[in-house]
Length: 295
Image 1 (cartoon, one colour):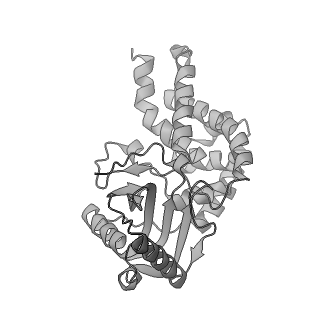
Image 2 (cartoon, helix red, strand yellow):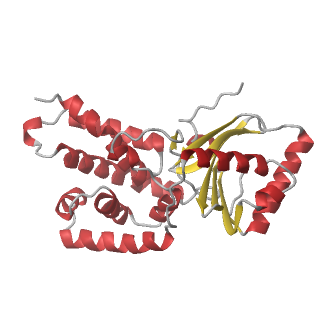
Image 3 (cartoon, one colour):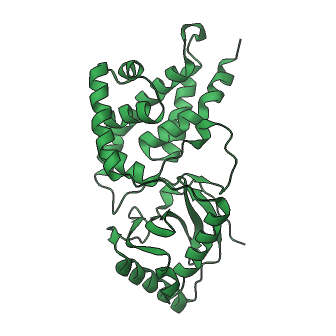
């Protein structure tokens, strides 16, 4: 007979990804999974026919409880909101399906506009492939109601989600390096060749550090922004020297210490060789799980 702890560990990665997609926070997701583990240890294992579904139900309910308070706090969030970055090595091996359940930032932003129940129904059915009978038990609604919740959520997500393009790891690193160098030069001619005309720049500082409060739309505005930052950095002689290419929520990007002190996670939505969206997280509360040492 498999030990309860071993059963839980088998599903930990899946549960963490589920909680992260529900909450948009790595630290909160880990706390939820830890609470689920404590509850799992008190369960009589013989009474559980499907551990994965049972644990998914537990985690979802804990997330729904958390979202009641999180949403009220989100109403007072300073500036644009982005999810905590989910950072992985570029080209890292993917051992099984659960490790491939990345959470694209565009999807996370679309999910933010759903109600908690819509979000749960959509994720459990469309992403994690639970049947509606199990979802009904999880969120305490009828199967027909769950189908309607998922349908409404699907319509919103379909409208907001851009197409996903898988990029070769070596190509991703080259592109990210080219973007990083171009973005830190006052001359924007190199950066211009990398951006789409309709590029959008998102920045999340959470009121803790400097960030753009509203999304910048269009190449001209984004180029002016980067040129202004570069000129300021050059004048202050505080260059960005610490830089690491990574995947952020499945997108090519990099971690950096901007001006030698502020940790930043930058993700690039690259389609057809051009950057269509730039997502920058600077809020230190959302980067506590990330380490990028200087030197």
